[in-house]
Image (cartoon, rainbow, N blue to C red):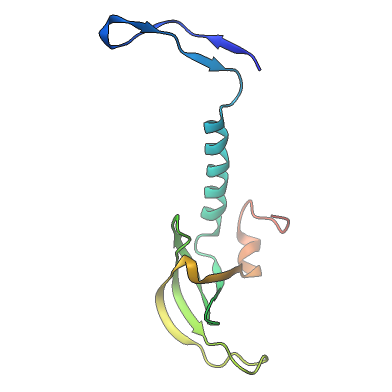
Length: 126
């Protein structure tokens, strides 16, 4: 790792100090890069149909509209399917419309296959 010294710069009180920089990307730059890749992947999934399984056994299906740092998810045109004792039948869906799922209740999230084919930059191996 090489280090280079930049020109002195003035600071308050009339003193000068020297900035030291490392060659190559800083830890902050690589963190921002991976953050922007994750953001792009999420943006590619906007308005795609998702199936979210919750801790209480319910499943919600709807359009992915939004998420936040706490992994809360907002689905549009959402339908709720109750956990059924019969594994072959999920019963009639209940129409919810706009739904917010708290992140701590999310067990799994699936994107419907036909939606994935349309998503750019989201392959089967990711």
